[in-house]
Image 1: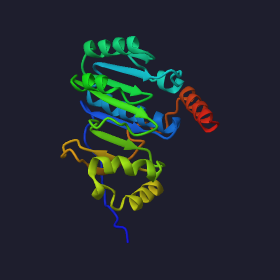
Image 2 (image 1 turned 120 degrees about the vertical axis):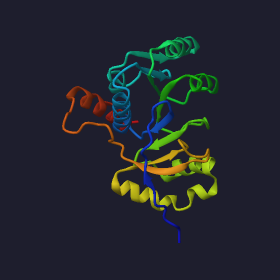
Image 3 (image 1 turned 30 degrees about the vertical axis):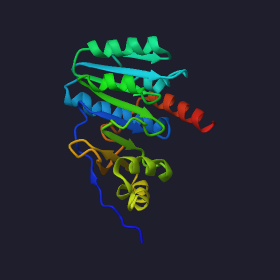
Image 4 (image 1 turned 45 degrees about the vertical axis):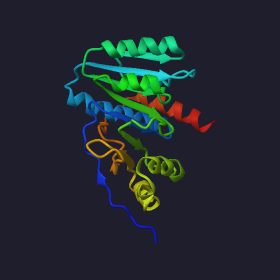
Length: 221
């Protein structure tokens, strides 16, 4: 019989860390970024700069571009990337950078890792670069997308009981976290509330409409 893991809730600060959020759809992505930015903004008393870099040829989703950035870049080629990285290097600290649309290239990731910034990645698949310090998954992520990522970082023992854990997390509508923050490099598994930092009862109708439009487009693919 497969053993069941008993996970603790993730409670470490994300300030100054490199964290990737894996969202299965626009609604999950919106919740991840809005919630985590809200927590970070409170930690730094809304000082410094918030920067968005959207990587790829497609147009960035409206819900993402309308979250109140101090600077936003659509990185379609090398020149765009250089402009974005130069701005981040010189931005007023503390700086929170959301990198959406894909994993930064190894050379860009190396540059970002040496800067005094908080880096939040966002995509629909786990990142390939090994130096992300934490990976958050939404509660509905398929097991076959999580298992290879956990095994690559934690070895065979990391996936023992994972199937039972994912089933339990899905039923509770909470997500899985792998994190090496304040841990050895192989990391530890935790659970997290995807809605952390999101204010309930205060709905921005414009944001809601944009998210639903993006989700509808995603489902039609």
